Image (tube, rainbow, N blue to C red):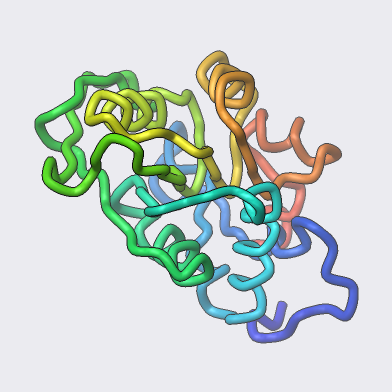
Length: 192
């Protein structure tokens, strides 16, 4: 597979076959989008697909979930010509993440202000715990969540809650949603 080539037919989600299978264990971090970053066309198409529902919306700032989503949400911010703010896992908002562990996240308290419209971005939403905590943190600080965008979102209880309660976007064509929910894309078979 040539990571630097893009096909002539670039339909929504064509780049998902470049995502690597789980490299961190049998239960978590199963979807690795880092190969998307190797090709500027691939990354641009992914960001374009992700932002398509938000083109007519006012967005003041992109807020992304730190760590693995950092590169991705920065690309979204550049595309929108907006600044970005990382939500880090630390001390302002308690939540349970995809591993089932209790954690706390934080954000700079001097940036988010009442009336500010924020687009929350992550690479994938598995259980929804981390994104729900980010939503609550942004809202608690007075900003408005303009929408939630993720490369992939599972139809878990938390993932469905986000899809139903916020303007939402992801890059998964409907025909691949069942594979996302099973944590295994058929294209993983091409990896060694």
